Amino acid sequence: MSGTAQAWAEALLASSVPKRAKLREIERMIGDPTDRDCLDLGGDNGVISLFLRRKGGRWKSADLDEPAVDAIRALVGEGAERIVRGHLPFADQSFDLIVVVDLLEHLDDDAAFVNEIARVLRPTGTLVVNVPHPLRASPVAALGRLVGRSDASHGHVRPGYTRGTLATLLEPQFSIEEVRTYSRAFSELVDLAMHAGFSLLQGKATGEPSAK
Figure 1: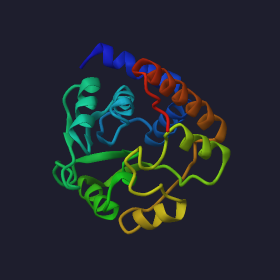
Figure 2 (figure 1 turned 135 degrees about the horizontal axis):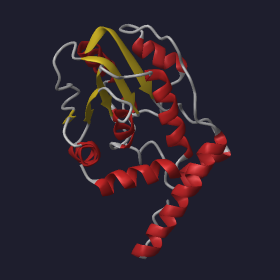
Figure 3 (figure 1 turned 90 degrees about the horizontal axis):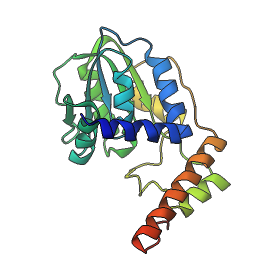
Figure 4 (figure 1 turned 60 degrees about the vertical axis):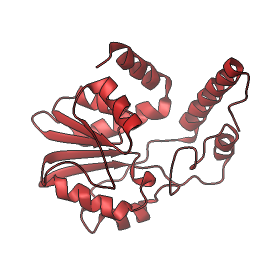
């Protein structure tokens, strides 16, 4: 693993209010992973993967494409695999804890993938799922579109999940114990402002505007 990559991940987390809120809530929900076999799926290009490993436990990671898997490996070393055609490359009942981070909204067949998660999770295991909520019409949402942040730009095949649609997706296999929302308008606005500033800097460096 690369010390430079880890320093970048730490700086990225420090600069993003929503990412810190996301990690804080995930850590609260997983509790102490020590002595547990754990899997993170779609771990924010390895940023969340890195910090979850620092909590303890035996971790593996998986994501949808090779660039994402390479990014995870740069941060955590080995133990990152690619998800191919919705199949998790792990044996049945391999894990005590699975954390899904911003992944389900990228999948055409999210229900089939939930079945895959159930296959590799042990019967007494815990599943923690992080998904975006569909954006309502708001000044923050409009600003996001202005700086080029959209479902298409993030590779989403659906805008996210409400509490009801997430329950419908998960409850054939899992019982839902808790649902929490961590993102608020202020933190999203701070994150968007930083994204816009970064986009403008990129545009100056290349001579082309990068925000649409």
